[in-house]
Image 1 (cartoon, protein in one colour):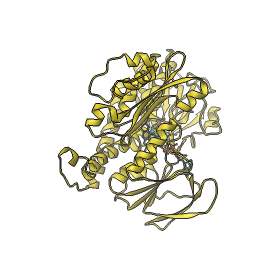
Image 2: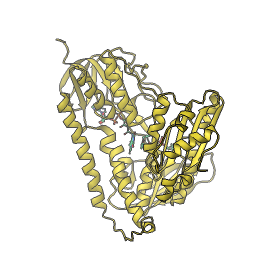
Image 3: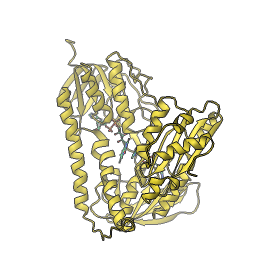
Image 4: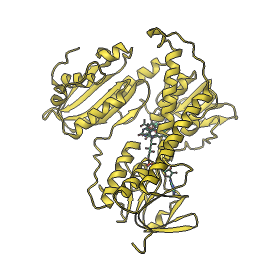
Length: 463
Ligand code: FAD
Ligand code: NAI
């Protein structure tokens, strides 16, 4: 240890990095974490998962009051939007949670090295004017917004997700470029608060990577909520006069161009790994053609003492995936066996209703072999019906021969919570019969999972 300052140096304090640092310290390793932001928690806590959910949650209440959903239940109100107060509660949530990580660092004796980290060699890193040496280095530098070529983000009219969380007024017309998770979540926030929202998506369907039927049904639900879609359309240019923007769009397959006027434009066409300024060459590392750092199953890079996790490595860019990798990498460094089952990582879109899935899409499952599929509509679920939440369904995909569940998809108000049981069932190798014969509390939305499993078996009761 004499030559080394730390057993483990983690670069980046997002959900991957801060969790890795805490677990490494818990395992008795001398640990530091470098973070250049003013606060800990990375993208997720500062400008991602947490502030977006604060705005989604608050805007759901506003919408329920404004669109008559509350009146339907006998509560008559005329809502008035205090956007500054809404932003205030968002900022409070972020402050409390990022402060919480600082507390956990102190409690677990993780040292926070404030500043930007760059490799000086395979076991050394500069942070400001200091060079530190560590036996193990974990790269957890996360990701940033993918820019749209030729389009400048001014965070006033043309914004990325960070700017879209902080708009000072409800735009008259917001154009969202990209019908992925960010576009649909943040587009929903501003639609509920009163904006007209148009989503321009390059592909012929929203939510790439999700189950085909789920993508189609979600599209229908968002249309019903008033979001307009221009699918199979690409943006070829944006003229921004400082107060509004004119987008030039044309069919993705080529064809006649047209224009769309907007008061705000959200660019949400994906995110890319953060490796700029890390001086990876000094460590003897390279990135792949997608800018990611390649790792083995144990999260080790091609340099044995350097590890990488989270958005900077291949796989879905999700906070819970980064967190689980953070725990596993620390356990591997400590000589234990840290494993993440990348086949069972849930995905949740926190719109209304929520859209969630774990495992294979029906399309992928069918490519791999014969499957049985069971579906159950939320309309037939007593709790959803009572709560006036008729949209959505649960779908279970099981192997035709073994009955083992290979994928579960749900559109429901609490799909994000429901999908956890599906993930757990899959981790335990459950069959659809196992789920169908598990007693579920009544009346809960989760009964729709049981009924979908009964549908795989033959017939559900309530349909
Ligand atoms: P990050 O959270 O990106 O953290 C990396 C940290 O490293 C950053 O703080 C950065 O400042 C720091 N850093 C980078 N380079 C250096 C350096 N050289 N020196 C020092 N520090 C450095 N995921 C979900 O699962 N659920 C959600 O609801 C969700 N919502 C999202 C909403 C939005 C608007 C966005 C943008 C993302 C959302 N995500 C969500 C994705 C989630 O935020 C990321 O998957 C997650 O934060 C990745 O964690 P990470 O630790 O790999 O990296
Ligand atoms: P995304 O990859 O989810 O969606 C981007 C969309 O933009 C795709 O549908 C793509 O086809 C489209 N697109 C790409 N180029 C385009 C172009 N030039 N014109 C029009 N459309 C174009 O990326 P997004 O929404 O930016 O999110 C980034 C990451 O953040 C995602 O990987 C996601 O996992 C993560 N995230 C997760 C959340 C969650 O778990 N609830 C919430 C928000 C973000």
